[in-house]
Image (cartoon, rainbow, N blue to C red; front, side, top):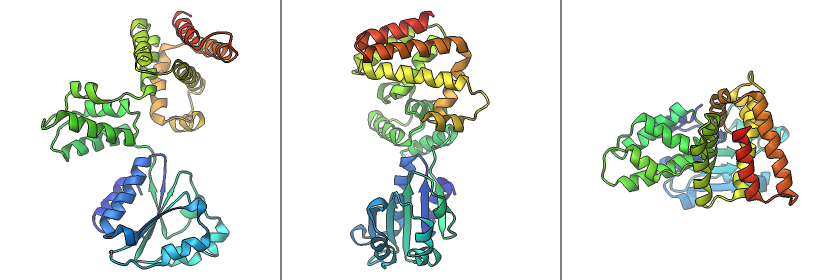
Length: 322
């Protein structure tokens, strides 16, 4: 089940007994908890419980999930990071999964997949992976529409890209824009540029894009803006080095899917899709040379052979000229 289907069922007053929320998008997981609480729990102090599954014994779980609601339609129990072994599910918790209480909703919030839970017929899996740009644009438009404000899809996409498709960040930017425009009925490009904070990775992407296009003045301008805004030279150098390593790895793996590359490189599919668009600007040989240059400067900076400010400037200069 995707999150939209889950939300539609909850809004209609229909809930399953046990939910398993998996995926990287924390915003969706936290909104799921809010949706369950708002719809079914009248008195949170009495009928809502949130616990850490890693610190909870099996004996401690049973009273939580078998108790009856006091003053609410249903009792809601949230268990975070809960990975029970197969013998526990079939043993001590067997009755919980084979005969769940109709008056209690159990919401399991996990950051890692857990096959044993997904095998249980009573468990409804809700996919909370990062959403596609198209889905996020629709969500942004809907959020503004709920405030009687219109926004062009291209501007909604720009907000999403500036925030690297992170829905928690985007939600914060929507609130900032709403406060900024006051009673205005339309979000403009000037509003977005004036209010929305660009993620540092987005800055690195644009800087690299300009380098690939040989537009060095704009690339240097971005670097100067980052430094003047308080970005530490060490962090900026590390970000550039890491990003070029990503580009090189993606260039070496043309047949690998965005999802697989994102998992291998510890980044988001959105970033991989952007990198793939940039590859056309670079020859594989120049990418290898850029990574080697940054690697050598990183070693020199860490061993005291050169200051980090010099390493940063020298690294960017060599990338541009080699």
